[in-house]
Amino acid sequence: MDKPYGLLAELTYSCPLQCGYCSNPLQLDDYRDELSAEEWKRVFTEAAGLGVLQLHLSGGEPLQRHDIVDLVQCASQLGLYTNLITSGLGLSTRRAEQLRDAGLDHVQLSIQADEQAASDHIAGTISFQRKQVAARLVKKLGWPLTLNVVLHRQNIDRIGGIIGMAEAMEADRVELANTQYAGWAGPNQPELLPTEDQLARAEVVVNEARERLGDRMEIIYVIPDYYSEYPKPCMDGWASRQFTVVPNGEALPCPAAHELARGLGLPPANVRDHSLEWIWEKSPLFQQFRGDAWMPDPCRSCERKEIDFGGCRCQAFALTGDASRTDPVCHLSPDHGLVEAAVAAANHPLRPAPGPLIPRPQLGRTKRAVAPAPKGIPVALSSTVLKDK
Amino acid sequence: MRWSRVLETIDDAWRPRLAPHVRMVFNTARGEYALLSPETVWAINPTGASIVELCDSRRTVGEIVSELRSRYEHVADDDVRHFVAELVTKHGMEIDHG
Image 1 (cartoon, rainbow over the protein chains, first blue to last red):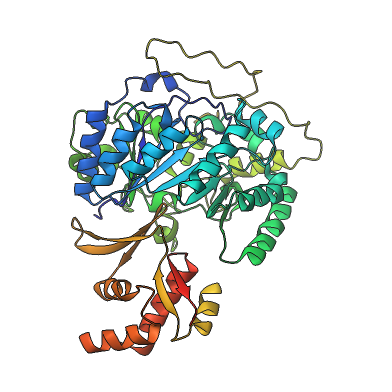
Image 2: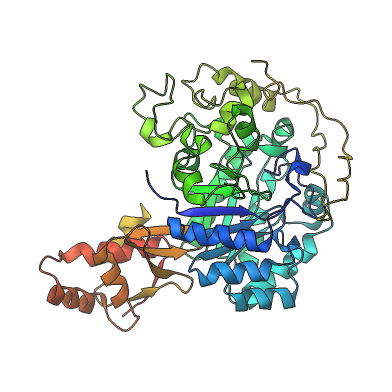
């Protein structure tokens, strides 16, 4: 068993944004009993001892944690490479300077589109201008800047403008990944999955930009796996290279495994009850899909099982209700019809005009506060998500 | 492949250095060296670590090869070039030309 290289620390699910593709779980209220700063510091210390080198501080919005500077300082002193994954809201000049002094290594800033109205609409919050200010601040303080624009049906046609915006910000990297249909993106999948034509156009733009920009800016572009022949090598294999700790201390082998972990009925692997070493090496949840002994056919006898590890366990669970099935994205999967149906629906010529996304609720950090109910217009849940099993 | 394009053009007069936001660490839990950059880890072997230590923006690729030859018995001509070319392609290293 290898040791983990990366830890994704989801410090809080509180967030001022309401993106309909958010990967956070639908049951946000279940994660309000957040780990304290002291508990996180113990987690970071144990993670470094286990071999973790990269720490991704995320959420929700990690800047909602008032102790973020303290947490960064601790991680930095442990020698971890610290990445802040932020919406940019809450990154004041003073806060940014404190984070730099605390040793923060890199900032990944999200933005929803290259134009104010579109970006604010997708974020469900007036945020575009503040994100522009945050980007300038990151560069001014000398950090490497990754601009992250999650792509989907409602913004992928703007990809040329998005790349132009990243250039103007002097981003070092721009991450343009189509959303995975986990968390809030699950029920929103029909409104998020782009058409084949959209993807074909986007690819031309990306290739031209890569040719033009050369080494100046790294462009990471990821198509929706629904359009791939084979599944992606999710997490490089279950509990193989990295893991996630969510706000209430539960450890997950994949950032989208909340529902799956509960669905398996295994005892939770919580850092409040166990050491990270035990969780990584011995917990039933982390052992469940490690290696290839769990694989059914067609994976078990497939020559690609060392390449894609059977694909995404969370996707298999979300689409079929059984986390141990082959990822339905794979054209060899017996459940591939589910993905084909979603793709056919996305490309149907008589498909109605784009509908609204179910917004992720805007969650504050006060434990007693009740999360506002999603205000969105109810949208029919995708049949692929609700597939009976 | 861009990788081979860089390799073809690599020159012994280049002076490589780590990119500003990349650092090398020794990972005690694994007993191996690694280069860390934004959201990326490159595990490297001890020879790679020796190369990185010599990539100080003063030494040329040619000088790094001779320096390594004085320390180790088997240093193939292309080892350093391959290593530097790959890291340049991946934005882990930068170079001063000539």
